[in-house]
Image 1 (cartoon, rainbow, N blue to C red):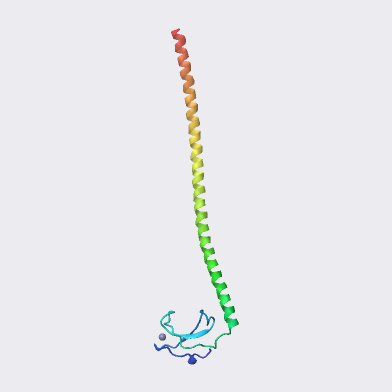
Image 2 (cartoon, rainbow, N blue to C red):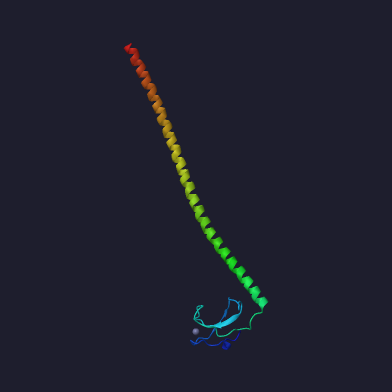
Length: 138
Ligand SMILES: [Zn+2]
């Protein structure tokens, strides 16, 4: 439809526009519609072209189904991508936390070793003093 003067007028006074039907049995067929049309309430004002043959309708429905499946698949992939990014971010945080824990663990082990050494020295010193005392008393 190249000449807009052929477009009919709606009840509301606006000139109709052309839309595509995606419903059976007229899937793929164009119709005149109002700009105010939101899918309900308005009736169409006539078809732009004659009905499609059964084979054309069958092919269009098949393509529409595949398109919908691909869109669903893309949506799911996008959601999975976002989830994966979140997971990677969380993983990074946990790795950093783990490094901090390991560092803290090293420090604590070193502290324990230092305390054990001090304790051993003190025990030896105490033993020497006790032995000296025993010797002096004997
Ligand atoms: Zn209208």
